[in-house]
Image (cartoon, rainbow, N blue to C red; front, side, top):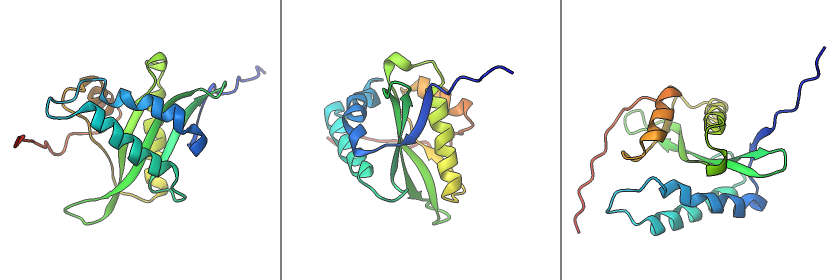
Amino acid sequence: MPVSEPDPLQIRRATVADQNAIFELVPRLVAFGPPEWRDPAAMSATDRKVIGAALHSLSDDPIVLVAVLNDQTVAGFLHLHSVTDYYTESKNGHVADLVVAQDHEGRGIGRRLLAAAEDWARDQRFDWLTISVFRDNTRAARTYEQMGFKPEVIRLLKPMR
């Protein structure tokens, strides 16, 4: 009987010790080129602030998960929290941030992280798991749809300045 190799990728809860590796990946959240009315530097600063707070959370909501290779390299991360649905007034899970390091794209890490998000949402007993994506981030949107996410609301924005 052949001996199976250990999985070269583990997904686990992130710790404060992972913060630097996670923060190095934050610029990937705006790498697709956000709309002109969004300031990528300000977006990244907000992402670091919110993700940093989630890393210090002792609860499972919010939570940050990391995809870690055997050599302990952080190959990606996932930031999850709950949101309240407008119509049902019930809490549901939300994928706030999902990033895979550029050197590790195309290996199924994003899909594994999304599967972990689904497990988290089920563990929290949520009815739904949502994710947002900027319109121009077509590659991510395509992946999310392949994973079973469906468009629900189209949010339109009109800059006032």
